[in-house]
Length: 228
Image (cartoon, rainbow, N blue to C red; front, top):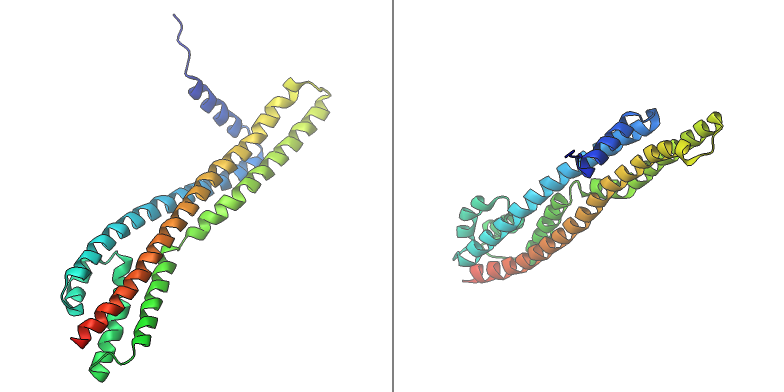
């Protein structure tokens, strides 16, 4: 009994063969899209790992913060959870509290403390959003780059058809199928970038809300700790 190669394997071989026969412009488009896709996946895996670690550290730090009797005690244990965005917000607030205590021996300006905490939240949000613009760019631009390669490939196919003097589908189909590869690759690069850009945006929004809540909790603890 003769065994036939799997259909997926044949399809993969056909695509590789078509890519190898591509002309310079479609080949350049394919190279650009491949680079875009690889960079996007590197960002996706990096962000996924960073957000996972940050979430775990946030949970551990907030438990330590609520169990600690004073802000000084929190500052001692905070180094264990340095990857937590909440720790950075805490540092901004604690430095402002320490500065006011050294100058006035009390929390004289709660508004300055609130601004310091808000600055910490803003800086951490900027760090969390770093490189996400690349995903947005890939998601919006890649389909058009792929379409450009397809249009150029179809033009070449019809020019070859005209020179051959044949109007059969068999004569034009290989050129058109090769041209459509760039569109497929453009979509292949854009779809994951768009999905994870939206997902990471939701994660950042959630972490931003957690930092805002923590800033309010820090204000309450600072006022109660100093008054005591």
